[in-house]
Image 1 (cartoon, rainbow, N blue to C red):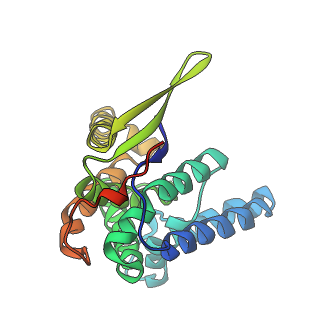
Image 2: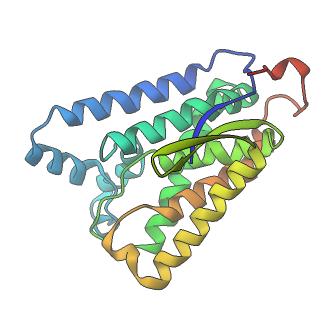
Image 3: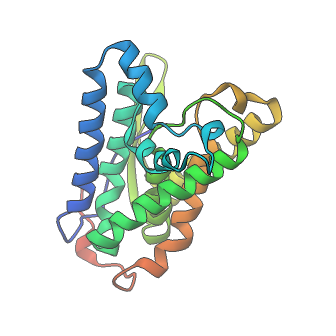
Length: 229
């Protein structure tokens, strides 16, 4: 399911959200400009490879930060930055730009730590902003459970637009991550790569827990936060 837009209007300009989108875009287009061999070297150098983490090579721990600005293709990149665009401005509005930026980075780190813990011996690089963005989604869930999210539900040969409460959209998304993550562990699929489900789970829970303590203003419902479609 692809979110199209929500019905919450931010009261401030989402500077940090746009800076994060720009940073992800710059790295993505830089990667596209590399040869295939250079792309592989770039991903192995700056992606998070659990098996290569060692106190003997402290520089490798920088990949906990660098991996969250890298993407594996157009669908991966677009899906992440679009989701950040939909939910990031409202979460940033609650937290303030500085705190939101810190929250985003820490959410990505927390997501990566959980995923890495569960695949410590893996030599497959972990890349993508989805763990950090999952933290943003968790915070949105805490701040705006009654918001409405217009969602594109893909069906054979057509799409179906549905207006869902945020608690339903994000709750279903989280349950899907948990189901997929448990399935990966039980089947041993984590060893072969694929989607980092547990990074999504870790990020979402991180955002859900820290949303309220990091809010710069008390969570309330303002009539003008809603705009009709």
